[in-house]
Length: 171
Length: 130
Image 1 (tube, each protein chain N blue to C red):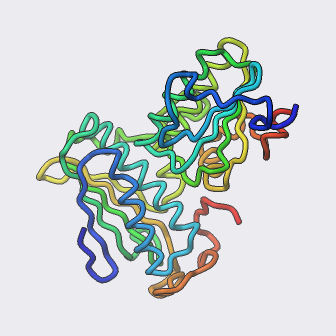
Image 2 (cartoon, rainbow over the protein chains, first blue to last red; image 1 turned 30 degrees about the horizontal axis):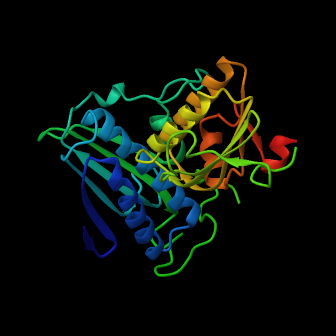
């Protein structure tokens, strides 16, 4: 694991046993950045779903191949404001990003909910296929309107700085 | 009916053939009602353990299976999938599966997935067994 100021980079083997390690590290970084707890919950859930999809679909099951997770503050692309960004890079099977869609929730059956959950709780979700192979997922959760909003380094920020923010956890 | 776990209720995990695992702390039984005490974070790694226990208990075809989630602080979609599978299996023979003690984080993922409409959810075990 590498910590660079307000960013952290974690490299794990594609195995479910390490997911709790990534969740704990990202939660702690977000706390240091002063991100609201409900936002941290949303980000860790989306990240969990994305990592599970990498293990299952990109790599076809648990293995020793790498997954790289980068987390840090960033400017939102699609609107003004800042967010907590998670970038997940794998080196497994690449698929056309346009084919990554959530399924109908009317069909009640086990599995297939990960993509729906990611899109439900994150503000920006972007899949890409790097030239070097594999897949990359960038997702961002809004944490404030402008740099400095919604974050209090070393402190705890209660509630959302942005009334329009997607909220996962109710108070 | 009062709470399982009081005198007259059996701890049956060993009887079912396995010790407590990382996801299930205990299985309690009275007659054809079973209660599973789930613990910790139910993620891709640990939902396998929960599934194993649920499938074993469902082989007994309990009339009511109560899944106690009061000690579960995190659940991902693999945990949801496990619960949905158990619900469908129990319905197949006419049994009931009820969730109790659902914490806010778990309730939220149930709501996002619209599964809060599918499961019977009770605040407490006593209410689920009333």
